[in-house]
Amino acid sequence: MNEMRLKFEQVTKENERLHAELKEALEKQLEALPFMPLGTDIPADEGIVRNLQEQLQLTNQEKEQAIELWQTVLQEHDRLQRQYQERMTETQIHVAERQKQKVIFIYVFVNFGINQQFLKTVAEQNVELEQLRKQLRYKPDVISAQQRETASDKRLQQMQSSIKQLETRLRVTVEDAEQLRTERTALEKQIGELQTKYANLEGEKCEAVAKLQDCIQLLEEANLQKSQALFGEKRKEEEIKTMKDEMSQLAEDSAARIRKAVNSAKKQYNVQISRLTEEISALQMECGEKQGQIERAIREKRAVEEELEKIYREDRGHESDSRKLEQLHQKYLLAETTKGDLQLSLQTTQNKLKQLEMNSEEEKSRCQEVICKLQSILDSEREKSAFVSEQRLKLQQENEQLQKEMEGLRKLAIEAQQKAKIKISTMEHEHAVKEHGYEARLKEMEDTSQKSTAELRRLLVAQQKATNRWKEETKNLTETTEARISKLKSELSQQKLRSQELISQLEMANEKVTEDEKLMMEYREYINRLQRRLSQAEQRAATASQKVQN
Image (tube, rainbow, N blue to C red; front, top):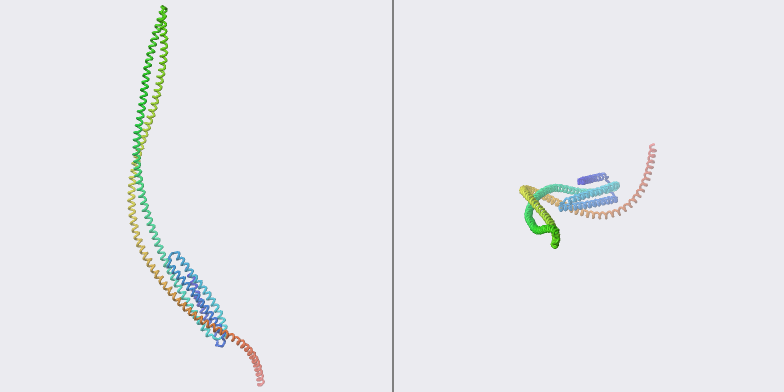
């Protein structure tokens, strides 16, 4: 932007310098023109008029182009002003800046092109002036040409003054735009500071809200842990109670079951033992009876043997009594058979007794095994009850520990709640104080922004009034220039008619000039002949005078 402004200033200075140089050159050329007397030679006047008309037409065209460019620049400026008023965002402001730079560059480029065209026209005018200078040495009507040139200079000066006025207005508008841009940058800085302050306030507010949410979350977590601990404590108490009930019920059931099983086993085994004892006693009685019978049989056998011996002795003495021997022998055989039977029955009873003893031993060992098993079950149940009691003690201890921890957590939660309440109250107080301060600052900044916006609006209204005034002036200038152009067009048409007449007269004059030149040649030849004759006559007169003197 600064570079474009410097270039614009350089171009305007160059334009002014070129205008001044052109003016000085034209004045010097007009002063250097020799004054020639009026004559009847019209074609030079027509050429001067034609050249001046062409120059006037070129200047009018350049003026129209400059006015059109100025109107486009004003339209672009108005459009940019409207965009600037409508849109105040940063990106659109940058776009407006770029468009402004583009417009300035276009204006500079157009001005540079105008200057180039102007220099070109100046060079052409210089060439034409040289030609006119050469022609005016031989042609009259310099006064009318000077008047027309002065009129064209006046018009050129008017155009230059109007261009200068337009340039000054453009410079003023550029300065106003620059001032507005500086004010806008200052306002943007203030708005940025306000936004940073507001962002800081929002950050502090968010931090306070986050801290408050953290405190609330900590309180909720503490309450949740408290409720969970209470629920866990209740659940553990219920579990301990149910375990106590189950253990007591299990102990009672196991004791009752064991007692019942022991009692039933005792009864069963007592019944079996009593039955076996009865059988053993019966067998023992039978054995006693059998033993008595055996002893009695043995005694009878001994008695029989004694009787037999007695009989044998007596038989030796008394061989007559054979019947008694046979009877005794039969008794002996009967006693032997009874003895064998009794021995067999004794052996069978002994075997039965042994079998009963073995069965009783087996039953006794089995009962002892069952009793050992029941004893081991009872011991395991006692161990289980002891383990359950230990677990109960541990659970009671854990429950007491949890109660202590719950008390500690309650205390910590109460302390945290108190600290959080104190912190929240202090933060709320600080936030309220900061909020009041920031509201006051915000009100002040709003007042300043309202004042600045009012000032900007006032400046914009003034700018709009100035632009409207400039538009009216440019409109008036365009109307006047259009009127002048129409007038010049009418004059141009008249000049064209006159130029046509002058061209016809010029053709006639050219013909006349050729004829005059022929006559001049003839006259010159005649004059030369006359001069030769005169010189000859003078020589003759001189010789004659010398002769007369001699």
